[in-house]
Length: 202
Image (cartoon, rainbow, N blue to C red):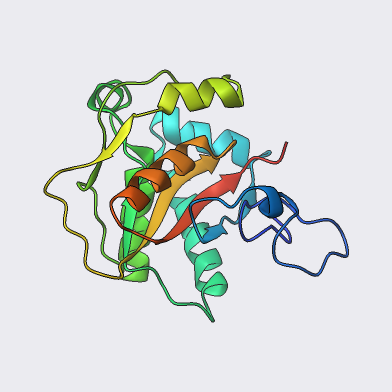
């Protein structure tokens, strides 16, 4: 399996060989709206075949196996860290759920919640408008596609000092999780972690 070795704790991209820091040079120019990124795999074969099989062909077994790998990775990654208070999956618009039949981030989050004993919040953040598929879009097009797509519902109530783990299947450019984290920060959540099955290394 293509493990993500020595990733930057901020963006998830591999650090240069021999580098002893925790963050890559990108952090000096840009600090993302989350405090920690964690993913076990690079998005390359066979992960790049298993994730689409889960996501687009409804092969939930593939997703569950990958989620179990993520659980083991997180248990090691958080050995000396405090767990977040709750899990929030990246939401899909209802039209996409009708098309696909399920939200892959929600399924991953359910498996993580059961395995780690962390509460799952699937209702506080919604995708309020349909968007084009991100696959194949440039980074700038992805930003435009997702601008204003998410919102925290008006009756959502977060406890003071709450920390959140945002869950998605694959992080490519980081546009989706950046927009989600921005919306949560606007709602007053300061400690945000990002969990994914895989990170694309360009």
